[in-house]
Length: 340
Image (tube, rainbow, N blue to C red; front, side, top):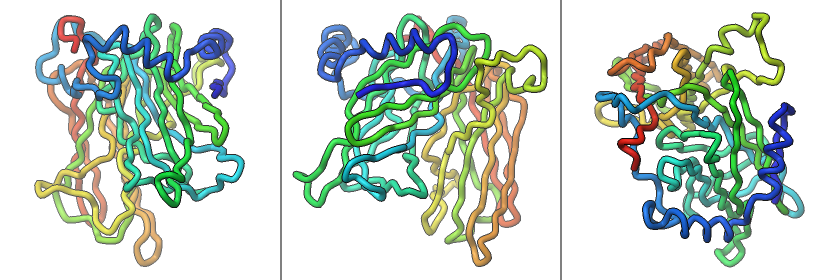
């Protein structure tokens, strides 16, 4: 299996050399066991570090740091006899230097597959569960173990099985990274963001007035803009940089009969953790789709994010049929004193 970057910049040759010499899954697992099992447990263990560690009590040693934001993952090209629609299950995770455990971004069992179609080939992501730290000396590892569901379990086949590093070198601006991982039966495309000097933002949405009509599809998404996005018309732009401000982070794509909401009004988001520059802002958008006339009602709330403050920030999403608050809790990502 091979990996390549879509865009071209001065980093590309270095990244390709690093990836071309990267180890197989079995080699990586053997090395991981030797280096990290004593401290991090089993290879299959998920990260035990929660989000919002430094929201209420930021430590002096917890600083803004570069992070890796996953925007989307797409099945770009099934090949051979595999044609969409297909049923997919398995695990996709990211590992960073904080604890080297799996930070799950996609996970489905065989009994709860996701059906990918030509109209919608995007995976429904459920993570990361905390921000992913990205440093030059220790790359983030993308781990993929995906299968295609067959008529019986013995008919299941491999869609993707790999470990690959994401390596980023010093840049002045947050920027987009497009990766394509190709194997015998498919190509997976990942849109990632290298977010400089960033913090973790954990988002909650709560219905405060009215209710979401049954049968009405809803899409909740976040966008994060940084300093580069604010000066897209300026003269100091770096042509190598692909802006992240237009990239959508889907928090919930609700297609069922009822909005997934708890008794206290909290909306059960699929994803809630995003990375934001210290000078950036968070924009939350929600769309109501469908209904008797197929109407679309879209609302947006945004505010200048103060990521180094203690406590939360609140915005409002107001439809004709209900009103919602969204609350953002900032937290610095890493502190050597509290590692693990």
